[in-house]
Structure formats: C-alpha cells, structure tokens
Length: 80
Ligand SMILES: [Zn+2]
Image (cartoon, rainbow, N blue to C red; front, side):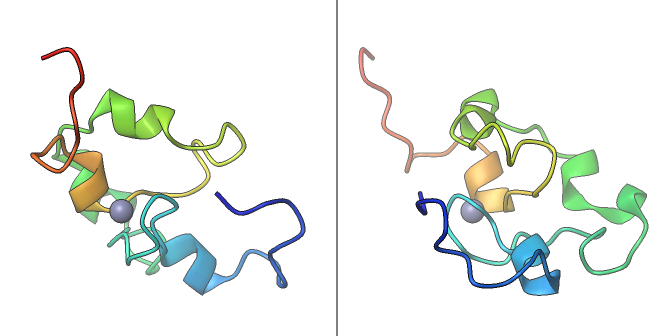
C-alpha cells in the first residue's frame, strides 16, 4: 500500500485503469470510456477476500483486475 502523499497527481485515467492490488491494468470498461455493462466484472464472480484487501477509501472507487478479483491458486489459504 502506498502511504498518503505518495501520489503526485490527481485521479487520472492511468490511476483508474490500474488494479490497486497488483498495479496491472484492471481491464475496467468504465475506465476505458466504455459502458459498465461491458466490464468483465459484470459477469465474473469477484472474490470477496480480494475486495477486503482494498483500502476502504478505494472500495467502489477503483476496479481490480481479473487476476486479483478471482480466487486462484496464487492466494494462500491458511488453515486449509
Ligand atoms: Zn490485480
């Protein structure tokens, strides 16, 4: 997580198109100026644990990428 004050600019297109968890392109349709209905997140099951990793201020503000939004083998699952 970036400490407050690290960001040098305002919320721009790059910011909106980056996954806040991994920094890769989130593929968000809205950020690309497309209808929200075309966004991958509309048809995908988002891992609730991924959303919990977002800073409260960023929930609902930024889209995460498909890799982070879907539960996968890369996510450790303690207690299994
Ligand atoms: Zn991501």
